[in-house]
Length: 252
Image (cartoon, rainbow, N blue to C red; front, side, top):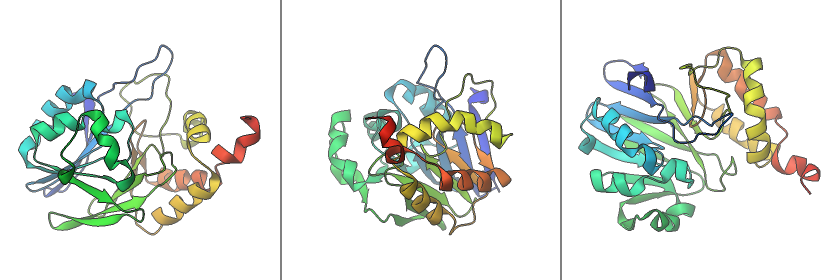
């Protein structure tokens, strides 16, 4: 299990942890799945915990760092099953509140979740939520790729969770979790982003929002982590990306 866990930040008070329990396999390639958790003292937020298939493994891994009962918030960046399919299991095993776009609240019943009073719906412009001694910032990322989509910025660690933005389709997982050669890595980014992201206009809106903050690391739900200079390179790449409706003539 240890090879599936990576501590991205730890100053003794505040931790940002990456889990990599995969639930999507194909013969030649797969979209590796990452889950995350932020802990500050006795508060924890679980981020995009994934599908039913990985619930048991992730539950055990989370328990190595904190009593699962102390999870205060569980954040779903959007509605897809690889993000939120395990909501019913987490609802039973915790008393956490669930944070998501207001667009997707009504869809959660299709995953077997009925206690809508436990949901904190985010308006389109996002929100700041208290977390321990800090504030978590939920930033709009609409149409990248979901129409109701959010990124999460942790100002304490300066880490940005980007959801499907930054996702990479990789031929294999050899334990590497950090982008080394950005130019080479764009080959794994292009196919997914060109088809799943809506347009260059929304790419630019998101990068403009992100640039307001000091970001040391971008961590996507799929693929590898961007750190240091690769953060700037990825944002520059997103700003210029032609995708979605920009390529509509190729699809119709």
